[in-house]
Amino acid sequence: MSNLISETILPNGLKIFVISKEEALVLYEQVNEYFKNEIVLHPGDTVFDVGANIGLFSLSVYESCNKNVNIFAFEPIPAIFNVLQANAQRFNLEKIKVFPCGISDESKITQFDYYPNATALSNAFPEDAKQLQNQLKSAIINNIYEAPPRIRRLRWLPKFMRSIILHQEGKKAFQVERVTCKMRTLSDILQEYNIQKVDLLKIDVEKSELDVFLGIKEQDWQKIKQVVVEVHDVDGRVDQMAKILKNNGFSKVILEQEPVFKGSNIFSLYALRQKSE
Image (cartoon, rainbow, N blue to C red):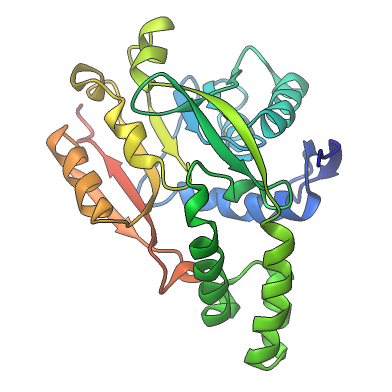
C-alpha cells in the first residue's frame, strides 16, 4: 500500500513534493495557527519541527526568515520522511536538517499506525483509531463552517448526509499500515549538535506530545525560548504540560482551541519567556 511522491504548487507559489495534494493544502492552511499569541521568528533563529510530516511548517519558516534559519525537522514514518527529505533537498538541506526519527521520552523503537490517505493522523496509539475517527467526524460535523474548504462544501447538505459522507471518507482515510519507527530524545539531539538555543520548539505528534516534554532534561529547558504544541487533553494532559512549561520558566502560557476542533479534546498551547531572557 505504498504511495508515489507527486508534486503540487502551494497558494504561495512554492512547488513541493507531496503524498496527497488535497492533504497538503489542508496542512498549508494550518501553518499560520502556529504563529499566534506573540510567537515570532527572526533570521538566524534555530527551530525544532517535531512531527514535521512533509515539511510545510519548516518550509514556511525557511521562507519567512529569508532563507536564513536553522531548522531541525523530525519525522519517524519512512514514507512521509522520504517526502520531507525530498522537499528539504529541493530547498536547502544545510538549513533544513531532516531526521528519520521521532522525538520521545527515551531512545527506542516504536510501532506506528501509518495512514497513507491521511498521513497527519498517523500515530503510535493504534488502539485509539476508532475513537479518533469518531471524534474528528463529530468535530467536523458540528463545526462545518470552520472546516477546510473541501469539507466546508458539505454544509449545504442535511446533517445526516454529512455524517454518511464523512463516514465513508473516514473509512478511506483510516486505511492503515503498521510501520516500525526509531525514536530519540530532544536532549540527545541538543547534545549531539551542541545546540545552545532553540528559538521555537513546535510539536505536533498526535498524542505523543507529553513524551516529547519528558525527554527534555531539566538543564535543556532553559535553551528553549518559545513553544507551540498541539495537545490531546487525555487524563488532564493540558494542565500537566502547562505546569511543566511554567515550572521551567515560561512566564506566558496560553491555551487555545481552533474553531474546527470545538467539542473535541484537541488544543494548542503557546508558551513564551520574558523578553529579557
